[in-house]
Length: 242
Image (cartoon, rainbow, N blue to C red):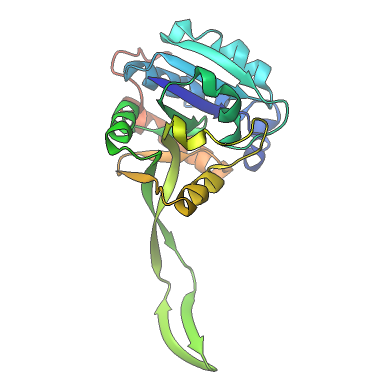
């Protein structure tokens, strides 16, 4: 029950909030940081070991989380000297990771059952399992197709539906075994590599609450709705602080 949390990004899209705080520490509601909610959730689901991959303002994350004991967790750190993207940090810590583990972004707000995701991943036998969520995108224009100078179809302001990655993955050691240490490597590259090798990732489809705190409008929405969703996000035994 080990999870690696990617918490080293600069959070460029969330500026100016991230000019003084790393994105995982921006406050949600009146009492919590995003990373704090994630750690409380992981502990409640039975996880005991957490590795935090840090870079931008990483000293603030170290100061806030410490050794993890106040969350009931054992926390260690991997400090990226250069940005290694979303998967690259794993290559230098392979020796201390179990055969199956969780990897997630440090800015995810969700009521996903992390333990069930990891258990489902192990049972699936896939090298990688991706937690997915359906998003709907409204196109504010009439969409048409044309061929040979003639319109062949037209749809007025369609709504498109996609399954997107939630930024939470079940990973098996073999999925990251063959890459050199220090190589920047993203989740997208890993998925494409596995597809080329004929080892397709599994999908863990989720329809609960999920919000990627990546843009100011998403962050504002999370704060606006936090009191509605707080009981879904936080373990029942967590006392609400005033």
